Image (cartoon, rainbow, N blue to C red):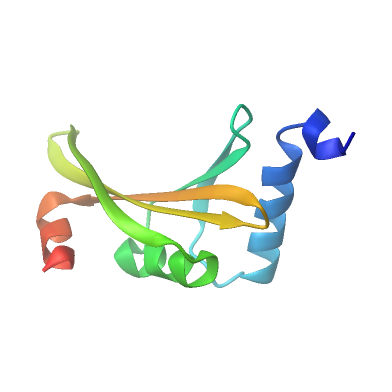
Length: 106
């Protein structure tokens, strides 16, 4: 039995190390691992759509606008990139003010 099937976090953790080592130019993100689905989740806090697009250039996949929500009185829209890196599902998310999101979509 492979080590990654015994330790579900190992595949996503290894993929993250490879991604960050091979692409140090990518904007820093907060990362977490969903051990149930062996998925790597990144959350961008800076860099806007340009940072998310840089991840898309490396990982492939497409960026999609998600749901709107209110946080600390500000209306935000989530944007997600879903792809696969080294056989590991990866999701990178970014929240932008709705007005800024509308400018991106235009």
